[in-house]
Each structure stands twice: as C-alpha cells, then as structure tokens.
Image 1 (cartoon, rainbow, N blue to C red):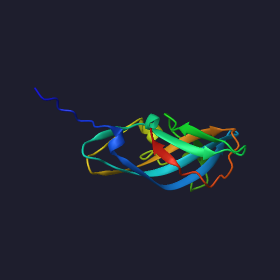
Image 2 (image 1 turned 45 degrees about the horizontal axis):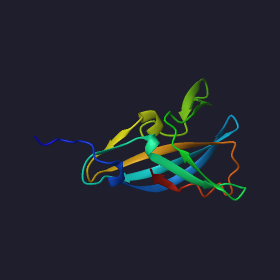
Image 3 (image 1 turned 135 degrees about the vertical axis):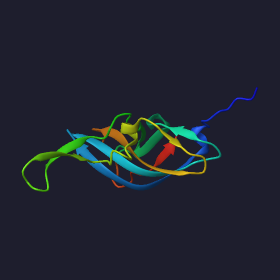
Image 4 (image 1 turned 90 degrees about the horizontal axis):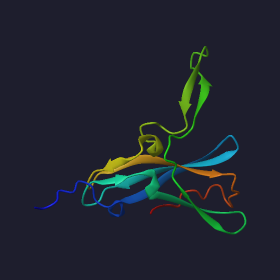
Length: 136
C-alpha cells in the first residue's frame, strides 16, 4: 500500500526576504524579516525552527540565529480617539510565524510570513544587513 504523504520536505520550498526591520525591546535587539515562501512539488510545513538568520558581528565573526517560536512582542499605544490604550503589533498577527507556530505551504503556492529573530545584546556589524535568512 502506498503512503499518502501530505507534507514534503521543507527543503523543497524557496524563501525570498522582501523586507526587514530591527526593533529593541527591553534592551534586546530583535530582527523581523518578511519572507515570501514559494511552495515546491507538494505541501510542506514551515516552522520557526526551519529558519536561520546569519549576521556579521562587530568583532569580525558571524553568528546564526534561529527564528523565535513565540509571537513577536506587542506594545501599548493610545487609541485613535486618544482616550484609551490599545495593543499594537510590531508584526501583523496573521503573518507572525512565531505566533502561528507553523504554516503549511501549499504545493506551488505562495505564503507570506514574518520571522522574528532574537539577537539580544550581541553587537552586530551593520544593522541594515539583516536579510540573510536561510532554510536549515
């Protein structure tokens, strides 16, 4: 009997960084990277643990960071009417891969996600060189 595998290897998909921005929360550097994910020949599951961000450090070395498996931080802002505080999202909850946990990328389909990487207090060489995301 043939196996009916619904999920193919994540290696069969391709990722393209389309935007990236840095954020500092409680003294920790976070890097958010928007990714267009193109499906391969079959459905594949993409999770934060599949993504790695390589950054050059100020000391000349490089370091890889795995995407966070939790939602990107939120903050409080004054409502548009100016009377109450409301939760604001640094990353759209519909695209936040850490919040979603994982997504199924349909065969030959395209999915947009944002992966967040915790750099912490590491000093990076160039804050704008923050799009080197790869599958692992």
